[in-house]
Image (cartoon, rainbow, N blue to C red; front, side, top):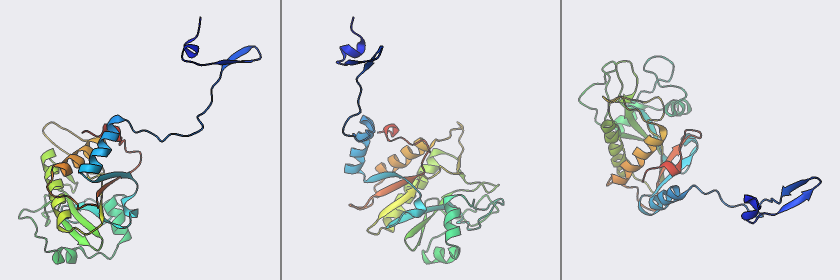
Length: 243
C-alpha cells in the first residue's frame, strides 16, 4: 500500500536500513504572501485611498510631514509627575529632541482658538482634539482630553472619531506636496471609557483610523499619501484589516 507521501508523487531513497523521503528546497525563494484579504486591502487602498501602513519609528521618518500627538492642552513638561508627558511617549521623545520649542508662540502664530471650556485637569486652557499647530515640517496635534488626574483618554468611540475627522481637515488645511506620517493614535497610554467598558486593540485602532480616512472628504492630494507608522510587535496584521 502506498503512503500518502507516495500518492502525492513523493519518492523515497534508501539510506542504510531506512527509507527517507526525497525532499529539497526550491531553487528560487517566493515572496511572502500576506493572504487574499491582505492583498485585496492593499490594492483597494492603493487605488482609492492612498494609505500606506509601515513599521518603524515616526521620529526617524524623513521627507514627510510628521503628526506628533500632544494632549488637549499642548503640555510640554516631560517627566514622571502627574500631568507630565511621559519621556518614553512619542510626544515626550519629540520634546526631548526639540527642547527649545515655544509652544505658546506656535499657537499664537497659527491663530488656533482655544475651546470655551477648560480642561478637567487643573482647569487649563485646552484645544479641540485633532487641531494642529505647524512647527516647521512637523504638525503638532492636540489629541486626548485630560481627566482630573491628568490622564489622557476618550469617553467614547464617537469622541475619538470626531478627533480623527478634525485631524483630516487640519492635514488638508496645511497641505504641502509631501507624504504625511501619523502614529497609531491611541495605542500608547491613551485610555478609552464608555458605558459598555469597551477598549480597543492596536488592530481595532488601525481599522478605525483607516475607515475614518475613507469616509472623510479631506484627502491628501495624489501622488502623496497618508502613512500610518506602527511599532513592531504591536499585533498588527494586514490580513485582519477590515474591508
